[in-house]
Structures are given as C-alpha cells and as structure tokens.
Length: 456
Image (cartoon, rainbow, N blue to C red; front, side, top):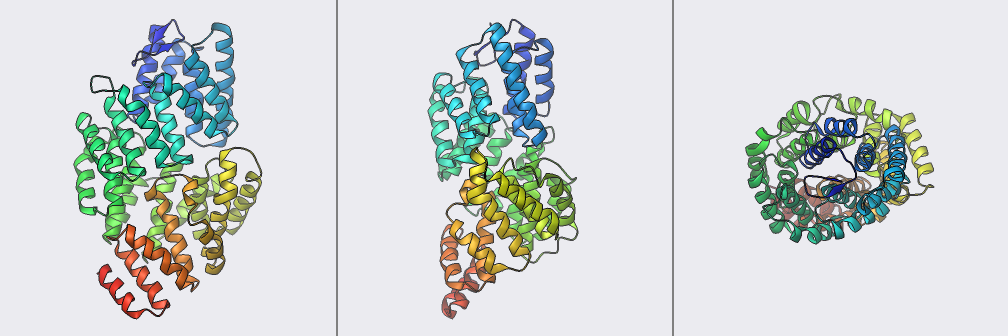
C-alpha cells in the first residue's frame, strides 16, 4: 500500500503513481491547469490503480458533456475490475459506490457516499471537493456549511492545504448567509495562499451580497495578478468583478471585461457560458446594446441544446437561443427537456419541477409574452434555488420574475417581490427603480418618489 499526500492509503505498489496522484489532488484543490496531466501520469505508472480510475470518472462528470458521461461509466467498470483483481480499501469501495451512483444520475446518492467517507476520513480532499460541488447544485448553503463544519476540526495550519479547506468553509458560510464568518475564513485562506482563487471568490461573494462594490473591486484587483496560471475558473472571478461594475452602471467596463476576460473566446465549458449569458441578460435589462454577442453565444448553445445534464446550464443555454431568436433550436431544446423530465435522477426531477418551466418562461419573455412568462415564474419564486448555483448567480432569475410581472402589468405582485428585493439589496439602484415602477403602477406616487430617491 502507498499513501497520498494526506496520509490516506492507496491500493497501489507504485510510489510514482501515488506521488503523481497526490499532485493531481493538490492541483484539483488549487484550480491548476495540470490536473489532467498528473492523472495521466498516475495511470501511466499504474493503469489499474482504483482511485485513479475512479477519479478519472469523477472528472468526466464535472464537464457535464454527454460523451464524457459515457466515459465516466467506462471508468467505473475499469475500477470495479481492478478492485476485483487486487482488492481495495473500504474508502476506495465507497468511492466506487459514489461514482456508480453518479453514473445513473443519483448525485444525492453520490454525495451521501462522500459524506460517509468524510465521517471516517476527514482529510479525503477528493470527497471534500466533490461533496461541496454536489451540495452546491442540489442542497444549497446550509448543507454545504454542515459538511464543512463536520471536517474542519480535523484540520489545522500544520496540515498541507489547510488553506483550501478554509476557502471551502468560507464559501459555505457565505451561501448560508453568515458573511462575517465567510469573510474571516476566506481572507485567512488567501493570507496562507494568495493563489487560492476559491477563497478569493468566496470573499467576492460577500461583497456582492452586501452591496460593497468598491471594496469588491479593490479586493479582486489586488489579487488578479495571481490568476494567470490557473484554470478557467479565473474567468468566473473576472465575472464577479464585472458584476460590481454593473451595479455601478459602468457598462463600458463590464463589456470590456466580457470581451477581454471572461468571454475572450467562445468556450464549450458550461461555467464559462453561464458567466457570459447571465451577464448579457443583466445588461439587456439596463438597456445596454450588446451588439452581436448573443449570436455568438447562441452558436454555442445550439451545440448543447440537447445536453440535459445540469439544469442550471440548460437554463442559460435557453437564454441565448431565445434572445437570438433561434426558435427551432429553442423548441427542440424544450422537447428534449420534456423527455428528460420523465426520466430518473436528481437533475431529471429538477428539470421537471423548475428547469423546464424556467426555459419555457425565458422563451415566452423573448417572444413578447410577458403574461405567460409571469404565470409560469411567479409560482416558482421560492423554488429557483433548486437549479443550483450561488445566490449571486440565481439572482438573474429573480430579476426575470420581477421584470415579467412588471411587463405584464401585474404591479401588485411585483410590488411585493420588489419590496423583498430592496430589503435584501438596498444598495442596488436598479432594484429601487423597479420598485418605483411597481409602486407607480399601484397608484402609490409618494412611495414611488421615495424609491426613486433611494435609487439616486
């Protein structure tokens, strides 16, 4: 038996494989670009190492691309055969069970296996990161925070990559609404390692949620020099910087960041795409001319309109298809999602309950059918969280609900939602302007004037 860099046993006799796998784990924790190369080196040293084969399957899933889903299943079969031939630790058996659950769409079941692993092995960084990912798309901030709280006492500053665990804890606290704890943990993680982009991003979320745009810009400007060698997650962090400038109505800066940083070239990565689509949607609400940018996104969306792997991504693909008037591709996507909604697995259920209705409403809005969109979206107002993503990312649909109500003339419904919105985002000029629009529609001219004053 060999060990990984956290001291966990690996079923391999190859010291080279164990060393390469440790580099793979550390690269994955740090958003490095060489993770795949280290995994290939692991398998070159020991092609039947169970954890390497399982990890390959995990990574295929993280791309959310149909062809790679099939490769994940192949990896699970290879790992099962390797374990049958040479045996494995209990931890490795649990990892195989997690991959097998994920292969059939049971992300919640996979998460349960990772949480089981962490009860016994709180230093299993693969289980830490993957459970953090699936809680993010399935269960939300409360579950993320519970998970990180269970393992944090087993870590300290003398253990390798403690800072990365602090960054995970920071984001969990932010999504659970504890901004003070999130900021403290995130800033300490960045002190330990200024290249810790997940911790950097966790603090950026705090500034976003608290409407502290200038502090957020300064925070990211001070750390952006650390990101050049990191993987595409750096684009999402540039997106956060653009979000601050958007709230300050600095639209030229937002478009510059779009063109030079987070959508400098078309990408097939779903996170890159969601950054771009959500930003253009927000700019449209502010009356900004985005030129031909929707058309470029729609070209990518057409290649993914039948993916139906992650409802969060699907809802963004529909934005581009609907905005660019790709009616045939949009309808084909709706038909495919309707079929997906009849299937099994966590994302099929999310698609049925939220993803498909949101996509239908998005298309209706872009066809000028605000009333139809409002009828679909209003009952979903407290269920959008099921799409996954962060509070900041999901806010694009909160805005969509409000605009559909305003455009449909349903001012009383809009008034209530915008009262809620301005209470939570009282530093948002746009929210106050929309609230004023709703109050005017309800005949409350004095309230509308006060809301406009708050916007100013």
